Amino acid sequence: MAGKKHDLEGMQITTSSPLIPMFEAFRDELDEHHDRRERILKASRDITALSKKNIFSLQRVRQLQSPIPSSIRKEINDRSDTIKELFTSVGPDLQGLNAWRYQRQISSGCQEFVEAISFQHYLETQNLITHHEAQDMIPGGVELTADDYVLGLFDLTGELMRFGITSMATSGTLPRGPGNDGNDGRDILVDLRSFRISFESLDTSFSLTDWSPLKRDLVKKIDIMRQSVEKVENAVYGMIIRGRERPKGWVPDINEGPERGREPVESY
Image (tube, rainbow, N blue to C red; front, side, top):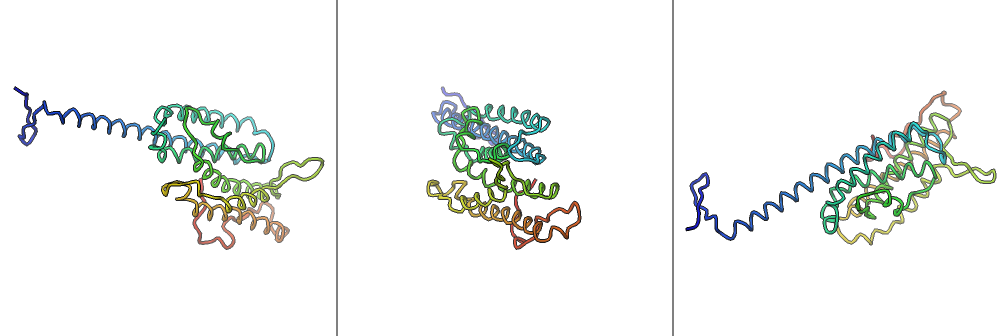
C-alpha cells in the first residue's frame, strides 16, 4: 500500500505519485538558478566597485603617455588581482547557454571594468583599447560582449572629461601627449572630438535583439557623451578667452554652458 503523508491542512498526498519526483527536480533546478544568479550579481557588484576605485586612483595621474606612478600602479594591481579572482569564480556559471541567460547580471561589471582598463590604457598610450585586448584581460572564460565593450567606452568619455578639466585647473594647460620629431602631440580635446564623431556614426544594426544593452542605452549614452565633450570645449574656451582674467588656482566650472538642465554625467 502506498505511503501517505498529511500537510498542514490535512490533505492527503500520495508519496508514490510520479509527479512528486518531477516537481522536486524543478525545485532543485530553480534553487540552482537563483543561487547562480545571486553569485553572478554579487561578483558583478564587487567588480563594479573595485573598477570604480581603480578609476579614482587613475584620476590622480597628470601626464599622458607616461608610466603610471608606482604608488598608483600598486593600488590598481592589487584591485585588479581581486577582480580577476571574481571573474574566475563565476566563470563556470557563465558557460554555454548560461553566458546569455545571465548576461544582464554580469553586464554592469563588465562595462565598468572596460571603462577602468580603457582609461588606464589611454593614459599610458593615448589610444583606445581594442575589444580583443579587453577580452584577454577577463579570465575564467567570461565573454565580453560587443555591447558591453562599446558601452564601457562611452563611459570612458566622462572620465576623460574629468581628467582634462582637472589638469587644466592644476597646470593651466590641456593634457597633451608628447609629439614626434619635435612636434606637439594630440591634446585630449582632439581625441574626445574624434570619439564623438565615431560614436555618432555607430551602426547598431548588429544588435539584433530589442533587449540589447546597446540598443536600450544608446540614445542616453550619446547624449551624455556629447555633454562631456562640450564641457571640455567650454572649459578650453574659457581658459583661452578669459583665462587672463581668472585668479590663480581657478577651477573650470563643468556645469557652465548650454548643457544646464540635462541629465548629469555619471559621477563618482
